[in-house]
Length: 592
Image 1: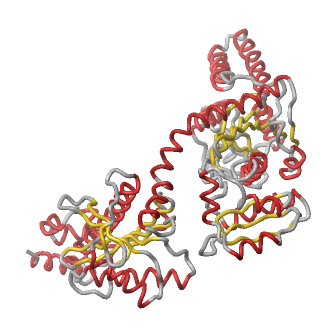
Image 2: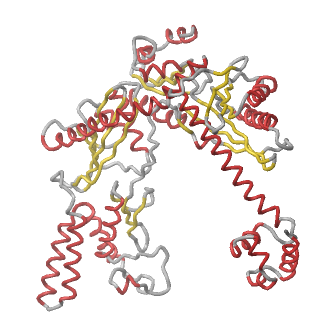
Image 3: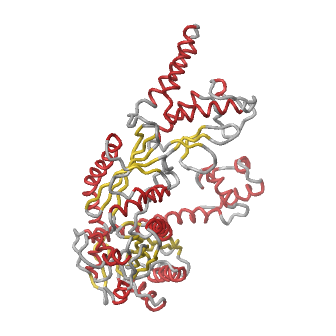
């Protein structure tokens, strides 16, 4: 621990608040909250920790803190800071799960639709339905039962749905608002658990139609009843009331937390959500942070109440979410919480072998690579590769790996601008110069290690630009391939030497993956560019042929060979002006 950290630790207040941990580049890597800042922050630097927490502590070079007036204020501030800084060690729900809802629109002529976006637009939302199929089947059922309009824009004549009895045809017939209110009230009652009542009404109508010998009508009612039973009654009833609620349970082991959420809608358990993530704070505190983030997502609507385990601060959760919180102590409700907790324990146990295997391939491999190269753990690795054919269409590509995993949103492509002919060294100088001038200008994070797909010359070229032009001290390693184009050696150091990495080690496999990925990315970019220029070189010099007409010609004829076989009239027929078509025909005949 550095002296500056020791001094700051001694000045920590014994009040609630949030703390922000920073790495050696000043980037915030973790945000936490504490009831007593002094105790919580100091605990990171005293005693023993599991490997995962120790990894975080090893990266901490500085910290800041913000004092708050209460625990709830600290919790809300923590959520906002996590959202703002997106620290890599914090829990963030990045799984992009978006559940469908059934929506009754707030329009003059309402519609029933399925949507994954919940907006404050006056519409009524029912769900979520983690099973998209269940949402679609339920909507189809309601479409058969209730004749609301299906089209997004009113047409000028009736459609097939009107003739099937599934639309009131507001496009050509006036519909009273009372009729819409009756239908929407019934749909609302249906989706809130009152479908049994609707089914009984349909059965009564079916009997009446049969007695009046209207057998076709009776058959329609019978089919509607069958659909209700197939779609709605196949779900297991979990509660006798019809309250919408979410039931939470969680389990913790080896520094990981698994949270299971049961969605209960209309008294029925419709599906569950599973989230798993590493934790660095007390489990109950981490769970509250998760809870706040869970409902900050647009597709998670807070139900009337939520069930939580006994160990969670229910009052704090209720104030955070502004919803009724229940911590059941006995009976069916407690059994449901226990079931969610048991499922969390099972999921956590099943996932551990996969988690450990993934860590071995990624973050642990990164740590051991840093040890082998005698540098800081290279959490961020940026790799470069050049691609060209005899100097034409020269390009370079960069890929980024963070903690051993590809960060594809940060990949970059470069067209070589200043180098003429096949000069790999100058091409590498250009791309390194362009990349890190921009990094410095925009204040982007610097890599802990740069990897060059190439030998000594390319590595020295990259070092020259970094050191002598940009005044940067970033370790640079080279990856040399064998005659079969496989990763053979890693060169590093001053002077450059082969690093004796075990060929069967995860750190060597990691470098192989990085080299394969940057080579793939560079080659695909080069092929894409070459394909464009090969087509451009033939047609771009012909007057009157721009990008739109080139696309038109290629789409119609498929190739230059077919174009050469075409007549002037063939070109005119697809929309090319006669004078341009004649010129195109003449130029194509001159081509070999």
